[in-house]
Length: 244
Ligand code: 13P
Image (cartoon, rainbow, N blue to C red; front, side):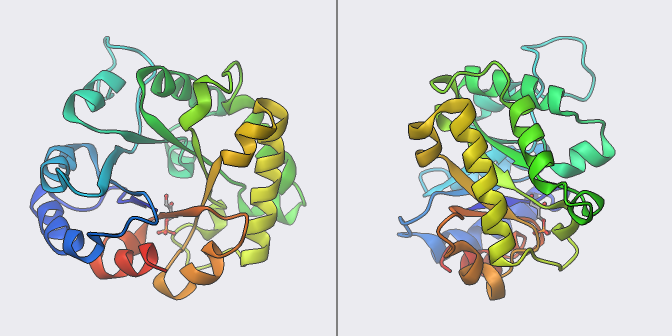
């Protein structure tokens, strides 16, 4: 159960969130819980979550070890802080910041090599869904993102299916639509990494997940968890989703 805070909250607001959230989920062992705040909130989040059952993730990582890359963040920097997870290839990165399947591939390789747990996002835009291209798009995104990565290297990989038309729009994929897309991704993962890998692969659903729809979505056999944007900013609503 992962929270993507996007560009919300200051360090003080981060501390407030954890003060309220941690008691609500302490003792919850059924799911792994990850919160991905903006980079500048990471120290506050890590400090607040220390010793708890909540892990902290970044929202992006550069593929180079270090160098003249103004504004970028390396895997080493994330690891030095104590970050364990990282979101890669979010549709907002693809839409607004020039992220491509190839740069997703570079970031994934680096994250896996460094020992970070990547949450790799895939998903179609509305025009692609309406043109009946959803399966092709998901397959292409997977093939390119996982190019030249072995099943052994990819062992910790988590995939998030986030239909772009459902992000921040209040429109949720129906549980059936989401499950169908997850099945396409799992089949593609079988082709690329093999059956055993695909059987153990966790695929999260993201896109307007709320306390009211979490149960019907996540109780789908194919859906292993959620990547939550807006509804993860409030401790009570994220808790309701975590404990669906
Ligand atoms: P919302 O839950 O706000 O639709 O965002 C989903 C998302 O993009 C999570 O990464």
